Amino acid sequence: MAELDPLDPIADQLSAVVALRQLADQLEDAAVENALRAAWTWTDVATALAVTRQAVHKKHLTRVILAGLDLRRRNG
Image 1 (cartoon, rainbow, N blue to C red):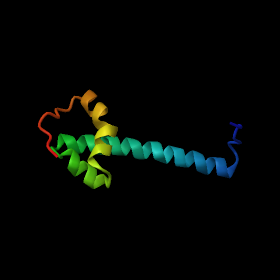
Image 2: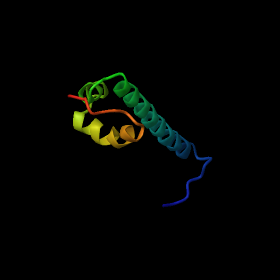
Image 3: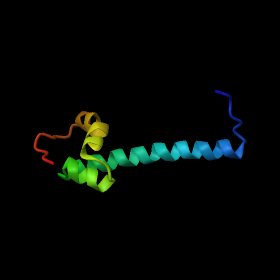
Image 4: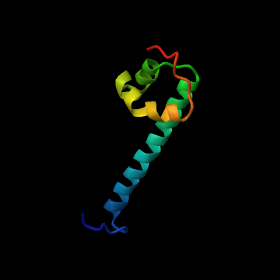
């Protein structure tokens, strides 16, 4: 991959896209954790994010377990 000129406006725009994606991922992580702490089901979270239950579960399960959330009584 070629080195990008940091002064190139296109490179700057693309760097901003990367930063926004990272921020969006962090916001999603926090929102999912908050929802699960508030007793939302995986289905509720998936519906709010406009994705499937399986997708949200796959993306977030390991992280929320490591965060110490008790997920044993989650239906849906």
